[in-house]
Image (cartoon, rainbow, N blue to C red; front, side, top):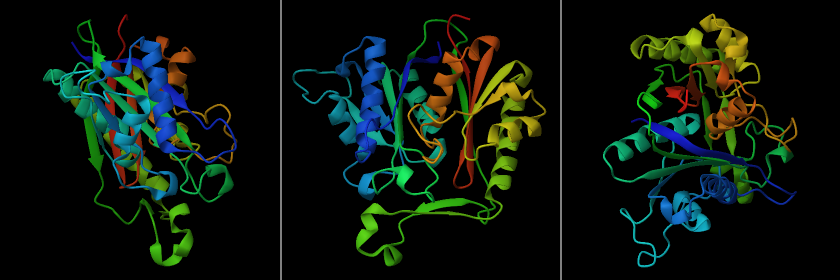
Length: 309
């Protein structure tokens, strides 16, 4: 049996207060558990994949803070489970969620746990993305609850991760300490080379083509759900792959976010999945192909066959 998505959820800031990556990831995780009808102690492993955090926090592990906020196995004696509710951060930029799918599948196949909760959240270090026109990413959290399926030939396939040797056409996010001064905890530098978008599109198209060939995926019967590094990325990827533009979709800005709030980043695969399912797009295709692309430059692909088809 393959690994399936039991529940999925996203979360956006609900007021003008500063956004928190921990709070957004935790809210999405709690909504996932509520949808699945499970208590927090039902989760054996939590993997957090967000990159940009409030005040540029890097210690302690963000996953531990999310675990505490959700209330997952905080008392080993009250809620003894195998693994004791283990959590960790997995940072791989825009590809983080799909990389976490790869790890989660290994954990489930070896019976190391029964359920894995994957969270992703990014926020502007200064509080809100909408206040900084130069910052490219949305304040957004998301979560997938993953478990073994009950039907054969369903769930996630193999994950393919690819990078490029051309590091001169990329995106990089970092804290320039010398330039930031006393406001360093509230600022971040996101540097993009002139041809980064074109190079990322080349790498993504090549990765999808390789995945389709090696994993025997018929792209003409597949809904491609890609990330959104640029507003026209899905349309341009469809053109490169010679696919119907309606068969390649990227997540729209989530509800309540202004057009100036940036693009979905690490949470994009979850948001894209939810919008495809809720919009009825997933029903028209035999399977889905999740595609993530971002800094590195790097890309990731994984197929998904929903249960009940």
